[in-house]
Every structure is written in structure tokens, then in C-alpha cells.
Amino acid sequence: MSATADPDEPLLAALRAAVGARHVLTDPDLTAPHETDWTGRFTGRARAVVRPGDTDEVAAVLRACAAAGVPVVPQGGNTGLVGGGVPGDGEVVISCTRLDALDPVDLEAAQVTVGAGATLARVQAHARAAGLAFPVDLGARDSATIGGMVATNAGGVRVLRYGAMRAQVVGIEAVTAAGRVVRRLSGLVKDNAGYDLPGLIAGSEGTLAIVTRVRLRLAPAWAQRVVALVAVDGVAAAQRVLAAVRGEVAALEAAEFMFADGVELVCSVSGTTPPFPQPAPAYLLLECADRADPTDALAGALADLPEVRDVAVATDGPGRARLWALREGHTEAINSLGVPIKLDVSLPASALPGFAERVPQVVQAIDPGARTVLFGHLGDGNLHVNVVGADASGHAIDDAVLRLTVELGGSISAEHGIGRAKLPWMALHRDTDDVAAMRAIKAALDPTGLLNPDVLFPPEA
Ligand code: FAD
Ligand code: MLT
Ligand code: ZN
Image (cartoon, rainbow, N blue to C red; front, side, top):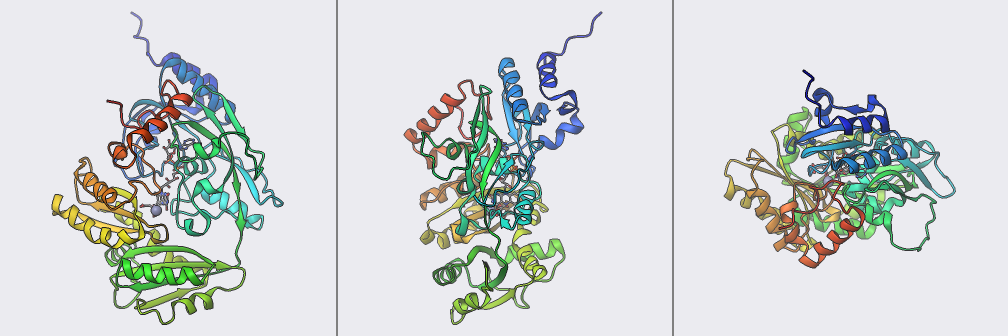
């Protein structure tokens, strides 16, 4: 009697022919790290994880999946926080981490072309070695890839000076669902011939094309840096301090916000000493960078501000890293308490203080045992709402917080994207005609819904 044939075998054979058997993973021990997101909230099953090594292999994989009618999920470093890079039920995960080649830095243009699978930390180091800087920065730098960051239009801690990821993209190479390659890597700063496809692919969360290479703009590598941790009474006080510093110090490149409970959590999880002998209700972390030492300019801007309760300043590398650890430690410290509900929102500046006051009450009203930790990128009006100790499989808290956000004129996604996490609330924030226009673009580029079919758009009624 012959064994029952595996219905996936023809597809798996085509994938092996495309990338080599070594790079088609089906063993559950090997696929598991690709099937659950960083937070642990989103998990699914991959038919296979495929690791193409170049653009032609990406195109061949897409053609094989299209022929088999099996959708794909592009994945980079799997550090996304909205479940957009993990499979639902039986998609092929295309892991882009082998697309990691770095071209030499083009010093005249202050640009570099890198593979989509290169990590942020490698690209930063590569630019630094050439005397320039890649200015986007975020805590997941050792794992997050340039392709994933472009796909999510990642923000990070320096948006107020340099913009988010889309603003760094001079060009893109990407493969569409039909296996066709859009290649715009000339590095031309001015090139108005037709639609801005790189700009459209940036932020499309893997629903329009698979990014294979990216041409990035680079910035000066500032020789001098200063970080100040400013103790304040709350959001409104922090906003006033930020407005004063922003108005005076052109070298300002980060303005991050934290509450006392978040800083206490980070200190207790990491075993570090709190920043001041007496805790303050909230903290603003400021970083300035320039050719000449910006410390005096920052000190001058902070002097005499009544909102400033205390300041800790660091100019040396280890000192700056200690202050930054209080802010960057939030994500891991929160995850250590259990699977969090993470809602990344932005609000008009005038609504931010009221939002920060109301959110914990809104959460408490739904689940009195839940704990809310808020922090974020104050310079961008971006708060991260993290709820722990609540049922992360439910939607009541997401719903209440996102409704409050929209009621106050904000966005349901500031920098993390919609992914799977926020599908049900897309229509809260974007009206029917807006969603229809986006769906038409998706249908034109991916008519069969091959690319990340469960991301960005809720199923049509
Ligand atoms: P993945 O998680 O693998 O994928 C993310 C999305 O991009 C998915 O929809 C996926 O399908 C798609 N995708 C991935 N690669 C490609 C490709 N080559 N082509 C097309 N689509 C692709 N985000 C911020 O914006 N700001 C922050 O400050 C920030 N800090 C973070 C700190 C920590 C500790 C962690 C864990 C995450 C943080 N993030 C932050 C979220 C995350 O790092 C970013 O969303 C990042 O851009 C994801 O990159 P990735 O390579 O891990 O992508
Ligand atoms: C951050 O700003 O640290 C990130 O966006 C990650 C998070 O929201 O936890
Ligand atoms: Zn963030």
C-alpha cells in the first residue's frame, strides 16, 4: 500500500527548486520562531518558511506560491508589534534575512544601498565606518531589518529631527505579487517620472510588494552628544519644556517621555538604580547632537524653566547609555510581566495630557486588575499604551483606547502599523472612500491577494 501523498509536496518541491532545500524549513522546531510575534500575542502556522538569497529567488518563490494559490507573509527580524509578520493559517513565510548585502557607502551622494534583510545596527555601523550616520534609531536595532522598517515606515527616537523611515528612502527594489521587479536604485534625489512607488511601498506592511533592496539617505555623524533626563510633573509640563528647548536648540534630536511607574518597572526588572533619589511623576529624556558640544545650549534652554524639577546630564558614552536604558528598557520590562496589549497611538499636542490622564481610567473600568504603562515619543505626539495583567485575547481594551484616541483627533497607529492587531478599527480612523482607494491600489498590484492577505484590511463584508 502506498503512503498518502502530501498535498503540499508539489509546492515544497517548487520552493526547493527556487531557493535550495536547505532554505525551505518545515520542521516545527525551525519554523516556530517565525510563527509567533515578539510580544507573544500573535501566533499562527506556516506551511513552510522560505529563505531566498537574492531578488530572483524572491520572484521565483512568489511565482511558485501564486501557482499553488498559497498566500505569503514577508518577514524580516520579526520585531514588529502588530502581528503583521507572522502567519495566520498555512501561509508561506518568506524570511528576508539572507538579503543582507551592504554596498559601499556613496560619500558624494551621502547614500547607501543595502539589502532588505540587513539589520538596522549593521547599517548604522556601516555608515559610521564611512564617516556618516544612518539616523533612524530604535530599541530593536540588533534584529529589526531595513526591509521590515521600510514596510512599517518605522519611526523610533529621532523622528523629530530626521523623519521616519519613508523620509530616508531614496529608492527601492521590490518584487510584486506577479514576480515582477520594480527597481529604482539610481539614487537620484530629483526624479519625478510617474508615481512615487517607493513612497507607496514604504508603510504598506508587506501587502503590495516584497522589498529586496533599499537606497538610503545618510546624515552627518555628529561628534558631540549630550543626553539630559529632566524630571517633570506630567505630560503638559514635559510639553512646555520640549517647546522651549525645540525653539532654541537646533541640535535637538530626541524627546522621549516616561512616567514614574514605567521607570520604576525598568529599574526593578534590570536591577538598576533609579535616576534621582526622589522619584518625580514623569520624565523627559532629551538628546542633542552637533559638531560642537551642544551641552551649554541645552543647559541654557532648560535654565529657569519652572517645570524642571531636576536634571541628570550625561555627555560620555556609558553615561548616555545609562539614561537611555531607562527609556529603551520599557518594552522588555513590560513583556516580562506577561503578554501585553500594545497600542501605539498619536494625538494632537493639545489632547495629549487629557488622553494620558483618561487612558488608565478607561482601562480600569474594563479590567480593574489591569495595569497601564504609558511612554513614548513626545516630540511626535506619539504615546505607547501598554496594558498588562489583562486578557490579551480579548478586544474590549483595544476598542476603548482606540475609540478614545479617535474621539480626541488622533491616529490608531503612529509608527507600528495596523498589522493584524488593528484591523477591526481601520474604519474608525479612515473613512469608506479612503479605504476603498487603498483597496483599489492593493487590487491593482496584488489582484489575487497573495501578499499578507490578513494584514491592513479587514475582510470585506
Ligand atoms: P517584521 O516584524 O519581520 O515585519 C514587520 C512588517 O513588515 C510585517 O508586516 C512584514 O510582513 C513586513 N515586512 C518585513 N520585511 C519585509 C520586506 N522585506 N518586504 C515587505 N514587507 C516586509 N517600531 C517603531 O516604529 N519605533 C520604535 O521605536 C520601535 N522600537 C521597538 C523596540 C523594541 C524592543 C521592539 C521589539 C520593537 C520596536 N519597534 C519599533 C517595532 C519594530 O522593530 C519595527 O516595526 C520594525 O520596523 C520591524 O522590523 P522587522 O524587520 O522586525 O519586521
Ligand atoms: C518604543 O518606542 O520603544 C517602541 O515603539 C516599542 C514599544 O512600543 O514597546
Ligand atoms: Zn516607539
